Image (tube, rainbow, N blue to C red; front, side):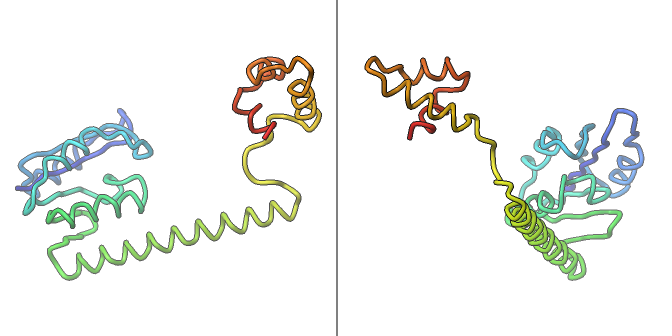
Length: 182
């Protein structure tokens, strides 16, 4: 059975072009979302993917209608492949039943790997440059050195304050006080 999926990013966009192409491709069931690709919440896509069984064909008008990112697309297509479901993208002419379609799929996988490696490399370089400038990556300290010393002094008095009381005095959470006193 052929299942189609269409997605438009806003209410202003018209899904007619996608719907016509999916009908022309003889999809017996068509699922449609009307939301931005940036959101993970795509209920029609979830329903469609759940309904697919081995031997079925999953059809999209264009790859960018399917996934939020290359990584997202890879995850979806890997799932389809593992479940024995054929994938077809009408615009890019990708058909995982053909040698060319499988090669295209593998090239997309290589590009996704490259994209991930470049992101990791840029992140590391940025962190290293920040450290050289004296910037410590990660969340900012919630307490100053004076506040930490004050917390220790409150805790070591004859009648010590509890971590909850210290947290109230300093205006931070109890967990922050525990970390400061550790």
